Length: 122
View (cartoon, rainbow, N blue to C red):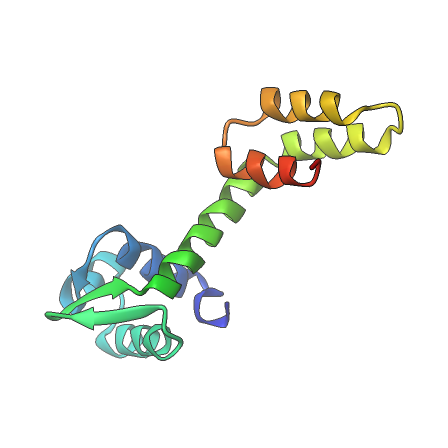
């Protein structure tokens, strides 16, 4: 996670995930110097998150999994108030598993977050 902890590296990682771009396109799109771009892509490559093919950068399978996790965390942050509502209902010992699952289904739109929360009920 160190490789994408700063804003510029995270934006680079997200730009690479959308489509394969060459170094020049990435540099222009993200307003990075050649040195900054090389340093950041090199770090992502060494960690196995990015690969280069035909002068373009792409996510590796590991990079795709990390990106998917990043998106899930981002969506969870966007739904923070809904997740807090679910937490507050969990504090009540009167709520059944069925009621909790119905609450999750009605409050959340994201399938992956629902799946994570409903997994705990099994």
